[in-house]
Length: 67
Image (cartoon, rainbow, N blue to C red; front, side, top):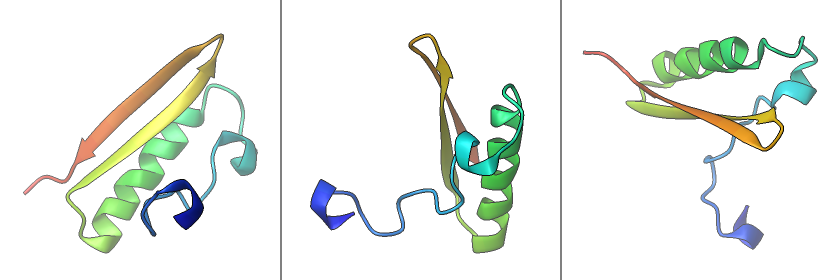
């Protein structure tokens, strides 16, 4: 991460759709559930999920922990 200017701990250690080996179309659900679990497990306030959905399209979702 230091070589590309990113901060330590600022990447997804769980991998993405290809690394997960799940059916196409399940990316959003699986990554969203993982990020919500991560929020709760580590007491964080915000998490973001980004996805390439093919054909030059992309999707992002921002999750905020409720009070």
